[in-house]
Image (cartoon, rainbow, N blue to C red; front, top):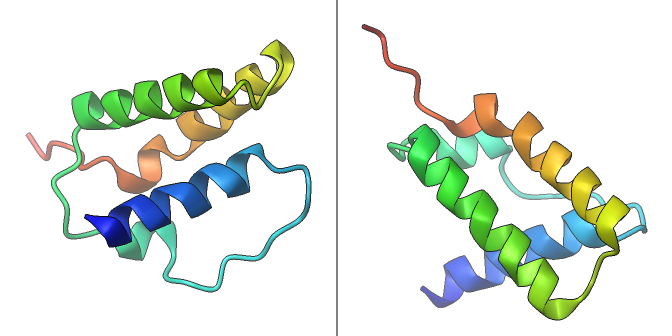
Length: 84
């Protein structure tokens, strides 16, 4: 759990920072490939991210909108699609 919290902290820093940063770990697709992430789980994660940023008062409303758009662009990379 501590490792996950650390990754979440790095993720939040990357999406809320104005500084350029370079991720040196696995790709988003590779890191999440083996997890059964559904749209519901993805939406819950997004809600958690948004709530965390609001609590920290880290972004103004325009920055928050930009963060939401960035998160939505990641959906297809991590959500498992039904093959039905």
